Each structure stands twice: as structure tokens, then as C-alpha cells.
Length: 172
Image (cartoon, rainbow, N blue to C red; front, side):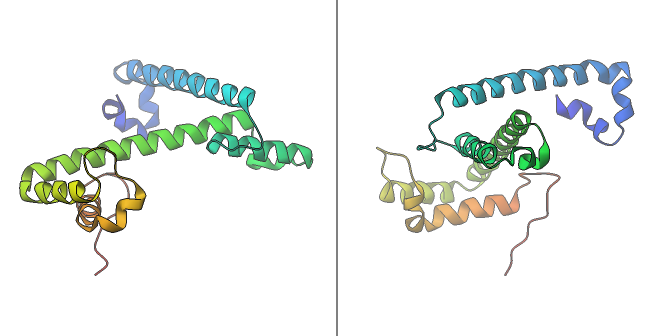
């Protein structure tokens, strides 16, 4: 959907033209549905909140909101902006940026592995030796997976994971 309206980033007035209006309205509708969904998660966190146990980033923010209220500084939190909308935006940012980057990285990784099957086989051998096939790899395994780590870093360096982001280059 975003590909069809990329020109709106540069010429916002185009959203009023019929050829862009339908897509623009659909994106706005999707945004509203997403915000409602994330608000329901925030509401659920509020009802199950336990200040002695931080489960995730939302609980951390709820703790900070609670602290700010106790200290009489609630209006200073989030630069004075409404707390719910700020938490929703944080969740949206985390999910949209993370999901798209992860998806694109996986796409590029698969493409490179198809072009370099000998490297794919070496990585699989390394993973089998260190992790095995009965569990998923963890960050604790990273020091023992140098080929896997260097391949992931090389995919990130060579590919266009964030097309409009910063340039990538080796440091040495």
C-alpha cells in the first residue's frame, strides 16, 4: 500500500487527488485499527499491572507514569503529552520498525544463501554443532557461532535493509 503512495512523502497535497485518495483513506483506517488494538493491550496491562514485577516495556512505562503521579510530575512525563497516545506510539514504532527490518533481513539472507549454498551449508554445520536441532539458538550461543554472526553482519552491510537509511560500509 505504501509503495503506491510514496509520492505523498514528497508532495502531500497529492492525497486529495482521486488516484491517491482511496489508498490514503485505507492506510488511515489501518492506522486507526492498529491504534485500537495497541490501546487494548495497554488497557489489559493496566488492569494486570503489578509494580513489583516488570514484564515488558509497557510495564516499565506504567511504573514511570505511576512514579511521576506520586511525585506530582505527571504533566512533565512525555514532554507533557497524553500518556496513552505516547505509549501507543512507542509500541507502533517498536513493532513497525522491528518487523519490517527483520523481514527484509530474512529476505536478503535467503537470497544470499541461494547464491552461496556452500556458506549456507557451513552455517548449518556450525549451528548443528553448537545448538543442535532440539532447541533454538540464544544470545548465549553467539560467541560460539562466529561464521553465523559474521554472515548476518555481512548481509546487513551489503543489503538494503532500510533503503532510505544510512549508508553501510566496512570500517577496515
